[in-house]
Image (tube, rainbow, N blue to C red; front, side, top):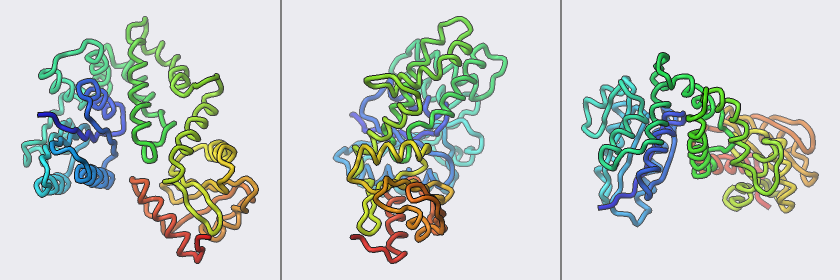
Length: 345
């Protein structure tokens, strides 16, 4: 019997390493990532909703490198038991803080002597067969994640850890699948350096090139410009479901996108029928960009007690409540605009 797998994992090297393992062994799988706390609850609800709307009858929720509180584990099991489809649970983790949950639930596997990537690899490779290259990556991740500073792979693991931590070029809240593809591409393309002399130094020197290779299309450019072009391409592809209105004006809403000046202006040039670009951050700040069709300093003043220049302004949305689901973020922004008495034109 085949299962559709929903694999929820952490947002660091170990978390993506777990997903690299399952991506090797399985095909019918959807990847999601989460930090601790409230985001886990939102991601679990997202998975439950996806299962409910899917035609798949047999599903596995796999959680790795995340420890659930007893309350979160109870909530998850309750949602699974009331689901009318066949939904199985498996959690593979190594954080001691999850011990109470592991004691309570038989689907919760905990082993603090290995990183989650190694637990996941050992679990599935014992069933489906080992892979030499993947096993090497697992050992590198294990050395740094549980901090085996006398391990021969430790220094290489430190470089890998920093690389994944700095790979913020694709926003996972807006572009979950694309972010996963980017992380898998990085984890794939670092492996040839494992065979080089002084691999940690060789990889460290190659990081910029590895990133550029992913974003390069027809011609070379700076990494910043290549990343902007990629983001503009993704935003343009998804612009209908990311659009917001401010009176008669049409804009696009992003979340924590970074490099707003570059990406915002590049998007408006590529989409001349759009009037403004807005980015909202987890700190409630907004950045606005325009191309002469609307004075965003007045817009910032009205909705965010802010200001600035006609084509570049910012403000603060005190009533904004951070979320990890883009559709929820967009709805909030549209509601805030309407609450200021600004009706769609």
